[in-house]
Image (tube, rainbow, N blue to C red; front, side, top):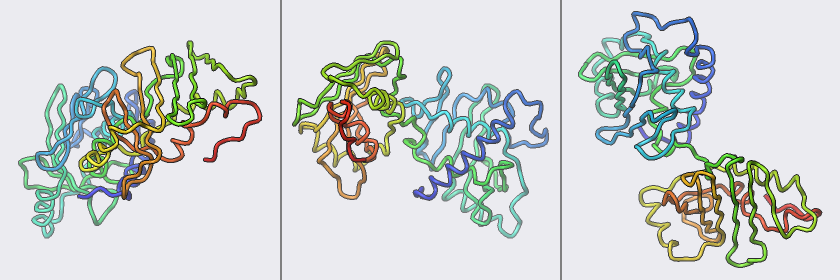
Length: 322
């Protein structure tokens, strides 16, 4: 089941629908899942781990404290694990697969289905799912060890459950380039290899910021720039062959470097920007994140909002092209 850009967009529609359900059917709701709905996981508050993927290549999302980690390394975007838990709790059987289609669907699930294993304090449930090509709002479902396929759905959702679990591990991750909260930023250092006169440092103190060397500071631009650090996201994390292609830049001097020092050292990030380098077939600007030792791509727009000259903050200066 190949994940295309279209599938990811479909997933976003799925998320929107389930999120509305999450608000409607919050944990405090008096409504309960139907007692005869054996496929639902009623008490999702006890779910501790979910493994999913194709064959033996499974990703793992595991509850850690108040959040979740993907493959034991990276925080999961809260929207994804909340969608997942609500879907588990609300999914229902529409009807069994028709007898004349049963063998074909069983074969499809065994060959191309996504395996999902859910571990909670009370039980371990394992099943295989695949999007129903005849109905975009439902999913083929078969419990592990069974030969009885079902057609299931999540009421109110215009999408199928399989789409969520067909996404890559990197799609589940929190994508903030800089995980710092504004009040925890201690220092923002932006340095340029060529025109060092345009390098600058911004000092933070509990949400108040100062910059030196600007005679007349445009405070609107200054604070808008700082606020963007909360919005800057990774467009794509490099993987596989893509990483090997980027490694050729490791010995070269980056065109720009941004370091955000956080009150918590674990959230400090140093990002090297290779503005003049391009990988064939890849969009965006390649960057290397030192603390996590990862290559990634940022969109041109995100890059242009971060990589600005010191003179930009002076009153009356033109805004860089977006």
